[in-house]
Picture 1: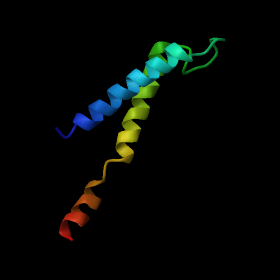
Picture 2: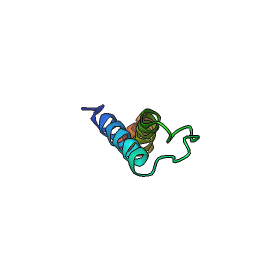
Picture 3: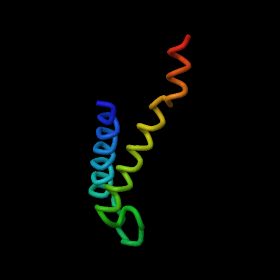
Length: 68
């Protein structure tokens, strides 16, 4: 269950990256991220994981709050 929010964040990021490539993409083909659906989806998955990481409290913070 602890990994569920990470999986959800990555899956949403993968879908968002693919949808960005599909609807916006790169017309010239020279864009390194958005020229390929795979690159765009992987980048989106990475961004999804980073967003989840921002909103996940660290262990030290959680322990300090539990003590109070």
